Amino acid sequence: MWMQQELRLAPRPRGFHLITDEVADGLPGLREVSTGLLHLQLLHTSASLTLNENADPDVRHDLDAFLRERIPGDLPYFRHTLEGPDDMPAHICASLLGTQLTLAVRSGRLALGTWQGLWLGEHRDHGGARRLIATLQGE
Image 1 (cartoon, helix red, strand yellow):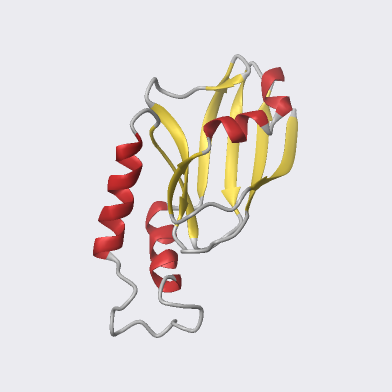
Image 2 (cartoon, helix red, strand yellow; image 1 turned 60 degrees about the vertical axis):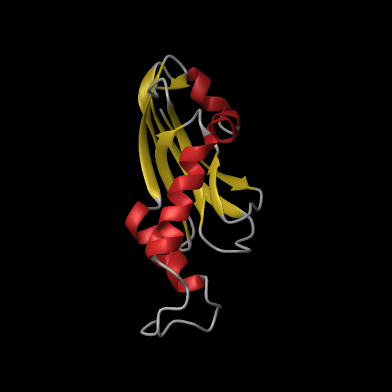
């Protein structure tokens, strides 16, 4: 069985946001899959997807602080500046972290580790709503 749908994520402030439940709840077909894969593709170039710590929000804060310090918006050699000082750093962060994830599905649920969760990395100060293509394959 194959299923594909688009999910819309509400606008969020800059930083990392746990979206595991939002993604799982947005895919009612997930419950029907005993064994399979879920591929998520973020349809944006200034945000990212990653799999990481789901319990302590300090981890999300610390990764955001790390990236902001290492990729500031005022680097003198940036040429892509028409969309604001946060845009080029956002593209770099998205390229480093990635915009796609493939996750195992087991018994109608995402097969995540105990402390794992899906994160949306919003790398713009005002990124707006984000869209994901979710492709579910399994039996």
